[in-house]
Length: 143
Image 1 (cartoon, rainbow, N blue to C red):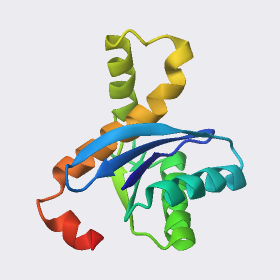
Image 2 (image 1 turned 90 degrees about the vertical axis):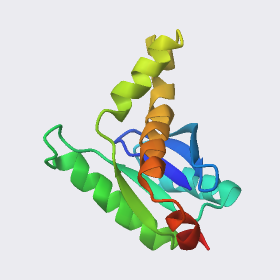
Image 3 (image 1 turned 45 degrees about the vertical axis):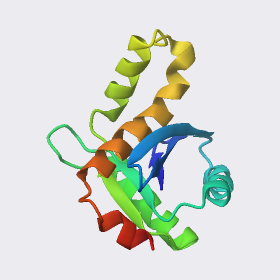
Image 4 (image 1 turned 30 degrees about the horizontal axis):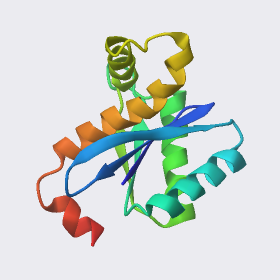
């Protein structure tokens, strides 16, 4: 599966395996124009051929929604319609903070590594999403 950390300027991308239940950061798609975003995603979908997409849902700390939440939901609906793949939404609260802390702990906390945090944030919430899925449910959905 492919996870996408939705942002207005960048999309962080991670990949996960339903058998090993392990997520890995994959990269970044930069650009505000939808055409650039969808072209980048189409290339990744062709390469990885995921059975499912997971889009990070940015919520306020109290769980309430805001403008970016609505935009991420719309983006998820567009992905589902465009690529005919099931799209799950994953709570991404604190995933960016976790990603930045991991980079700092690895000695890569400077601004020059900021771009890595988006793919790592996608990895963080995808791993949490994978961990929450009951054993056996993902395999049946992916067949």
